[in-house]
Length: 339
Image (cartoon, rainbow, N blue to C red; front, side, top):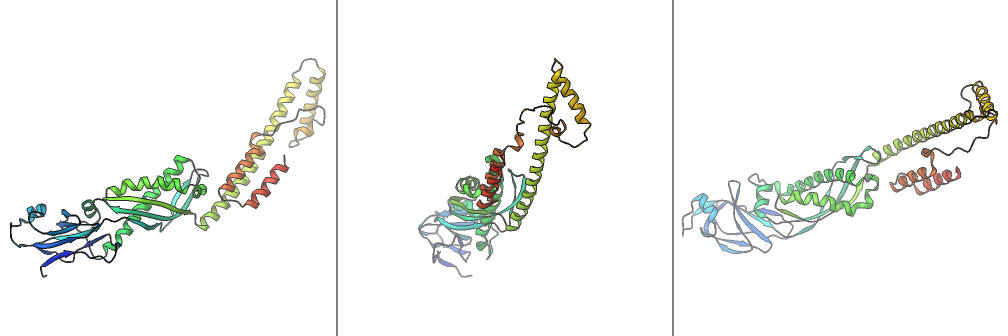
């Protein structure tokens, strides 16, 4: 390959991130031109060596001290040598897109249910340490297709950190996944702090990061609604059973206290009434068994059947977009009418 006396990268735009000069046959005395917002770095055997900022340079042993020691460059001659020259773009890139190719599996801490989520957004970055960037990202394994895969590699890192950060966020904040789109700004900052630390080891600064949306696939959402509906039915049945048991226990307490009263009349009547009631048959409510023999004090509703609790749960489902406003109003009216 012919020796070149001019080494430069005339980029058509600032879209490139890193570019390798096509020839590795260089000689002392060649002119190196580095444009604004660029850095050029010489690489030999996978090692990032001498680095040049914006300017024009005549290559010599004086400005290639690290490389000169490796290849034993003689002083004052136009000696040829072999090395890679990489140009790194240090401008800020803000409008980069990221997104999940496959759903991220999470556990909703409020409902204790596995949920798959998808997410997308935008991010921005700039290279702050060209030497670290070349070693960590490019190294000596460069090939013609790698540059196009660098951004894809970064997105993979983002999604991995996003998955870990989301899991921690929902646990630490005790927030349901179904309420997360109301907290995207807070969540974006939480995830950005995780990503920033990871990208620093690549010589990259994260300048902006945001999550535009987190969504649940329709199929998973429909399954969740179906299961949640069944849970609510079971919960209502359980509440009814608890309420009945609570009422029965309070009735027995009242009867026992009355039967223990000294003075005979009322106690004897209740004792007789209780005996008669037992003989009426299993399954008949206590209030019907005693047949008006006593005036039992009104029984309070069991705490688990409290309409306030029901309304709170109903509002939580509305906030999580699990029911419509129409469903909410209809069910709320039913609960209030039952009081």
